[in-house]
Length: 117
Image 1 (cartoon, one colour):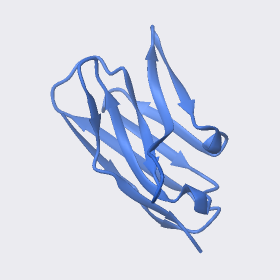
Image 2 (cartoon, one colour):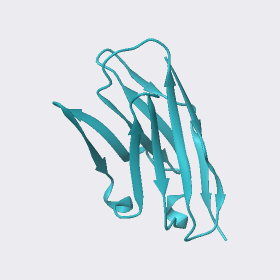
Image 3 (spheres, rainbow, N blue to C red):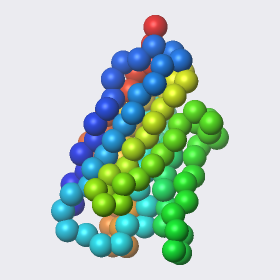
Image 4 (cartoon, rainbow, N blue to C red):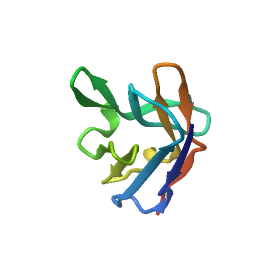
């Protein structure tokens, strides 16, 4: 299983970026797929995740990004997106895609997001 993330970069405060992460390989039964981030000197933290709950999926967000970030998932493409609006300097971090399967937890290589004027 491989995760390929796209979309990081440099943006001014108040700007927007869209991250995407595609999962490839042979696997079944995604339990969760989402994004974490790690800023210099800080621990990795959850940003947003889509979890499987029974017959439907539901999204969870960190309080710090609620109302600004939106996570979505294309099940046919095994791809998760993170639309980030109203970005702040505090959002600067390396963003990691995460895929949780019944048997293993996978991480992408990380993509840098820098919010600066």
